[in-house]
Image 1 (cartoon, rainbow, N blue to C red):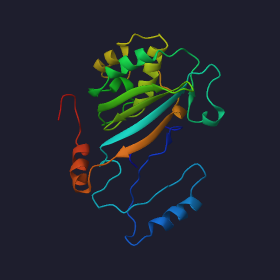
Image 2 (image 1 turned 60 degrees about the horizontal axis):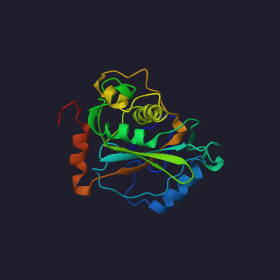
Image 3 (image 1 turned 90 degrees about the horizontal axis):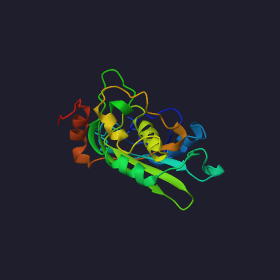
Image 4 (image 1 turned 180 degrees about the vertical axis):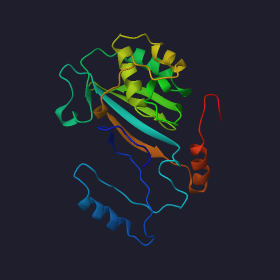
Length: 221
């Protein structure tokens, strides 16, 4: 799998790799899996890839989307499963300013549930917010990788900024911490969706996987 998600998080762009016979018909495999999988899980395509491909370690970046309904009446019933109903004001200018200060490579320990032996250094490449005409705010988050609960913790912290409970510079100030910050709320899982994973060209897959497997440390290569 390209990435593990918390229970309750959705994925429309998940990628998985598996060793299968070379002569397997991809179209047959998709139809067969559709009959075997539960109704809320679907494999939409199967593609032959080079032996060096690894869905997790060869990935260049992951893209997530978090949906927040800010209308007084809450989330559209047809989208309530993937949209958080937010019953508070949301200052998008403040949220955007706080988000910009988080971009770049940092130790995101304050926003992660630490795993033994795993690094919390990540390169956050995009964290932007837009508001649609229906009042739904969407956060688009991209990074080379994410640690456990990182996206939901970032969104939770920024929603506190948006409602005026925290200062604009508060989230970035947490980057100096080396342990998870107990005062950072974790946004509910159902508003989050993994929407895409990027990979390099075939001739760069092995090199990318080797780089990803290296343990990253603050200030390191």
